[in-house]
Every structure is written in C-alpha cells, then in structure tokens.
Image (cartoon, rainbow, N blue to C red; front, top):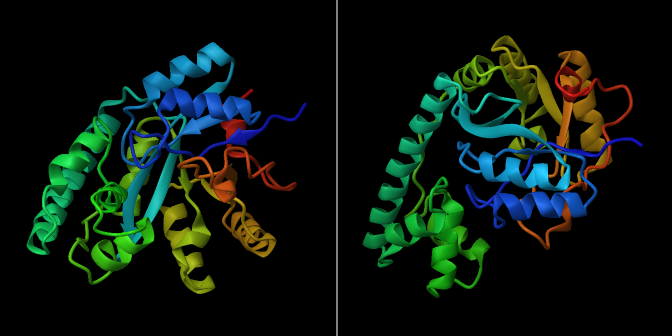
Length: 278
C-alpha cells in the first residue's frame, strides 16, 4: 500500500487550533502514515506529538516552519527531519521567539492607541508556550467584539496600513536554510504559489533558495489548482528540487487544508522523504 504523507501542518503551539496529540489523532483518522509537525518558529509541540504518534503507530517527522524574508517579502521555509536538540537550531528558535515577542508588544501598543485595550496579556495567555502571531490578535478582536470575523480583524486592525500592521525584521532565506542544515534537516520552500510572485520573480526566489542550500519545494500545498501544480513541477525539474507536499492544516472545517488532502506526490517527482524514510 502506498503511504500517505502530510509534511506541513500546525498545532496550537503556533497558529493551529488542535493540540499536537489531537492533531496526530486526526491525522491518523485521515489515514496519514507519515506526518511532519511544522509549527511556526517553534519546536515546542514536538515532544507531545512524538508520544501521540508512537501510541497510534504513525511516523512523525520532526519539523519547523521558519518565517524569513527574500527581497523584503515574507516567505516561509520548512525544515524537515531536523534534530530538535541541535544547539544552533534551538538558538535560532529562541531568536525567532524574541522577534515575535517584540512584535506582539508593538502591535498591542498600537491597538491600545486605537482604543483596543488588554490585547497583550490575552494573546500571551492564548499562545501559552507557543509562538505569538497576528492570528492570536485577530482572535482577541473577534472574541472581545471589536470585529465580527477574523477577516474583518485584518481589514480593520491588522492588515497593511492598519494600526496593528507591524513589520517584523525576519532573517534572510539563506540564514533559515543554514539553521535547518546545521540541524541535519532538509530545507523546503513552502507553498510557493502563496507568495503571488510573477513567474520571473518566483524563478529568482528558487535560484536564491537553491544557492543557499535549499533542496526541496512543496509541489502540493493543500487543495490547489492543477495548473499551479504543473508550474511548480516545472520549477522542481529546472532547479532539481526534491518534492514535498503538505496540507498546511490549521483547524478543522477547512477542507481545502484538511490533513491528507494533497493525496500523493505526482509521478516523476523525486520525493523529499527518500532521504530519511526507508
């Protein structure tokens, strides 16, 4: 039987809804055989996920999704099969945590000036030991009645040009790739279609990622259009990238990002897991 892989998902240690153990249980119920937990800029959920995976017989790949920048644009690099005890990686995670903490304090200050009080303590409690991101502030705004939907929270308070629009100075792509490789992992360019780059710019990103030591690209990210998949396959071929796939699952009731929704890697693409799954 062909194994089902899902190598990109999130728990409540970043901006997901489910705990790591709940996430693993859901993946198992969705017939996932190999799962990578790739929370944003944190490894904190790995231990719980590892125990849950052991209990249900699911193979767990240690992963992380780093926030970084390329030519001033925010991009995400997934690290797969990393050593979660590697000193360089742990130092990088702490650095990212501090960046997020500083950003969250500034967002809270700006929201306060806009008449929204009490956001920082709330999002810190909500995030717990996990990373704080704008989705936490959006949830706060919704639950406190400042907005009627998450989308409205971004349009009114958190989106471009709004009071809570605080740009973070993320590390460059090459730095994130170096962290991943130092920990023995494989660097993957996450959801390339999400950046809405022109074909020329996307090729430039792939070239820079390759030069930095990047080895793989997400050929499939959630339920995506077949034309998008074909275009990414061409990039994988041109730059000799290994292929990865992942739902980018965050919460239930979003079928376009449900666990296992990607199915199987297209034929002709060399899978990223060939390096560490036997």
